[in-house]
Image (tube, rainbow, N blue to C red; front, side, top):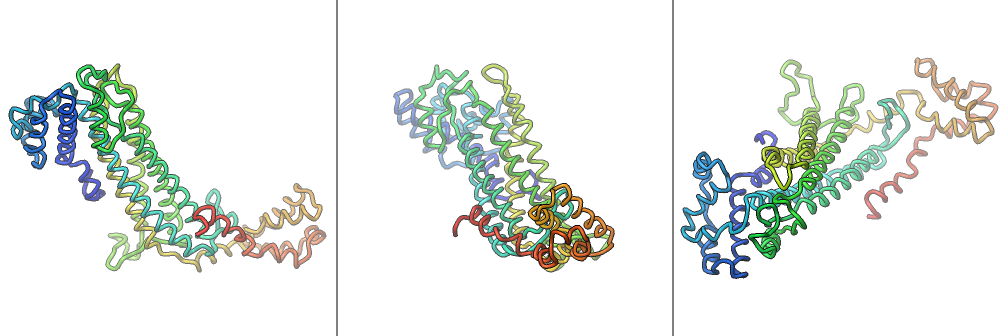
Length: 435
């Protein structure tokens, strides 16, 4: 995590003080459950909360202890003893380090998920507003980067809305899958701790019980979670790339908002570069890159090893913080995106009507011309237009073979721009609902 691409709420989830607070809560809730089961004295469980429930843990002190113990959880428990005293002997009864570490990671990822879902909600609201604003703004649709047929800018944004709606569903599902609690002891057999302790801690920490843990929570859950973040990042990049293409000087149909005093280039004062969306493309690459090590973490040795630990200490914070920042940045880009309908119309017209070629093709086939011949006739009149040798409609009207099948009025009708937009309302209802 670096401040340039971080937002405070998400960063706070991963700060050491937050992590130690969660560690303590897990230990204290477990002590409560054990007290109810008669494993430890109730007054000791109460004392644990009273003596350490509101303390600020000394991160530097824990680090100092860990330099000796070479074990983070033991270092924390040693520091905890400095607040709790004798009753610390009733903390961590029958538990193993992974019970604390894995359950904590589940809490952190669940909280991070909540922020990411809220980020997507904000993005969806911005996309929806702009989609309705430009519901019927004509623009050219492109395939292979080449002019294809007319669409509306609103439809482009409706597609993005549908895509991020699916992203939201995936995040909700990923949150549910990752939010499990394991308090099952060494190798996950509950030999030294009652399963009811796990149930109690899970309920208190807002998690569900892991059905079977092998001392660690199975890492297929984490793989699915980080893969989901990678998919969301890819969707961020797809929309960012669309904006980058539209901002190119030769296209110039939309551009990022350029604020007062902003500079685009240290050398060329005229530049207005798509720096935000280029940044989003880079951030998306980072988030996707963290999905693969999460998948490689699935294959641990036997009941556990810690080869996953170093990976997760990095990708947990970095992936969630980076995606949180990217989603917020994309929301700002969409919210302030400058759209140029006149340039969209100019680009629509630049190929002399070639974008209506399919309509002419279909009209010829419906007049009895074979598809092969119809394609040949339309293409024969389209190719000169590419070379700047005339207007498509005029060439069609001058072609004797075309005129045998279509009148001038019928040809003119095939150049009606509104024809392409007759189902925009239907698509919008599918994407946004009746409202």
